[in-house]
Image 1 (cartoon, helix red, strand yellow):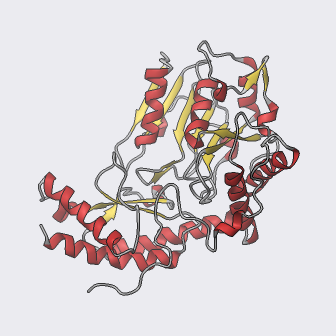
Image 2 (cartoon, helix red, strand yellow; image 1 turned 30 degrees about the vertical axis):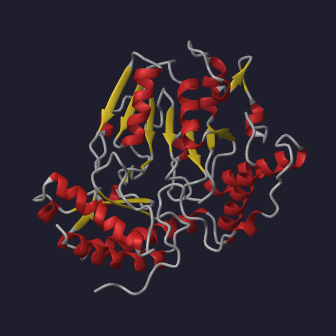
Image 3 (tube, one colour; image 1 turned 30 degrees about the horizontal axis):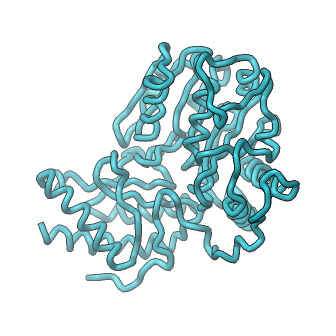
Length: 383
């Protein structure tokens, strides 16, 4: 039967993600609009984002953290273009964004000593084959595959190279092994539900040493430069951004961080995200038509929760009918105003991707799931 209860907030996009509970435009009324981002007050507000981020995430005191252009993508590209080339590099990829970093390193930077370790959607590469005498680039959580690394145990403590971690859909929802990570990037638009366009980057002392001792052989655009005259540009990590930032976005980021602090910080953020995953796991366990893209429970993301249609019935459909079914199911729910933007990523297997980050209420996911059963039956009957 058609459900009657709908989520209070129908926002399940994996980016930009749902705003924090209780958010409204009034949350931005103290934004320093019309002010220079170089002004004392504006720099202090940017520094507040940096300081609160470091505190909540538990970033070590000897790491630096800064605000950079172009969201997480810009932050990752900054790391790749500024740091790679000093030694060989191992590129790990098991979904589209990780594969994109491989493309950049192989086809754009054209590095010669590249070892690529890949896995299909739903799986992880064989970490035992990683060479830690090289630099290592990987995503902590595969946003488009719903597969995360369970922990940092596989990362060598006495590594020679740097570890560069794209943590955009993991930061603020998962425990990051900071002692194993030299470069970590993320964006405001994921777990904290902030506005897009700006990224964050954290650097370990080892990464800083690389920046100050190595100069890439290729030209570096201004927005990728982390060093000047052989020294780290400290201003980037002290509120002096490379380019003009949106003070509205900065205010929104501050609002989200204050919200997180008020109810318990990182442990509570993780708990909220885990509760969302548990709600989906309970539903999938009772279903005969849907299953996790990540078969190993220890590797399942609690933020980008990716599901696929069960082969037991779906696999018998033609490719055309599979596509028709997936589109019909999604459109029926969106037409009802129940949930938006929950289809699988364009490069991933057809299915469902439910954002389960900390800004999403578990009660809303629980209200959403019965609608998926209803829409499945409706779409199946149309085939």
